[in-house]
Length: 359
Image (cartoon, rainbow, N blue to C red; front, side):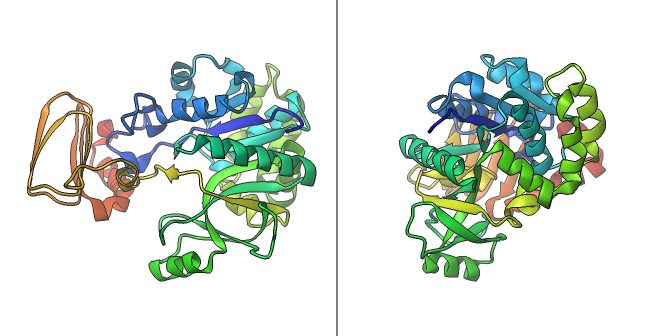
């Protein structure tokens, strides 16, 4: 790497699919959801501290969570925590942070990563990141990490890349939405598809130019405020302007429309901890296929369950299979594993029925 890149960690989500452990006031990125002793955000920051110095790490989150970020990562200055006044998806968030960083170093390379992913092969991750930074520096490219698929998963988006590209960094042909099972199997057999990890590497002027061309509903509102960033007037400008930007993901806004997009197919032992079942898949199981996270659990004829408890008490499970059991201070949820995608909708049902204090 010619110059030290910056890292932007996206930490503004509410983690709806991890309810009831993840709440509006304390979402999953601030929880020790894996039993490692660290929150997901802390693990992500520690991973990048092996690549860049702490003063090159920035975190963008909802403004309601800035104090939580300070608690989890006290070594970062308040200037390194960017609070968004509304949840407008990833394109506005990345635009906001990119403009702010460009006032510090207008030619810098930026690594964008979610706060809630797990990566076990950290040495290989570091090597791939360095390769991506080099490519972005030299080619003015938009680079995304592509995870070599190990199964026909229907829960991930896919990236189709050019197999004829003899370089490790391959040109992206298309982005594909989450497929059905048959299509996912075809992707796996073809060998020209990878999972979209949502980890991006680019130079700041390159992403800002692509936002200008492909996402004017975001860029045209935020870029005029450039002179105000990193000044006392920044806060008022962002508070007034940011909520007016289009709510759109960076994938839809830029990556699916740009032509200079590349991917690095890699095996970094990656997991997107987006749901309880993805956490179940990620963690070690006992002989009956159960995963127990904290608490004391006695299983009697129970198989393939996940038990998460925040309290030190005995939990007895008899004859239950393929269920998620989450026990918090004020809520107990027992839910079929196969139906977990409905947990997000369940939160809306609870809200409509007056259970707001539990959300």
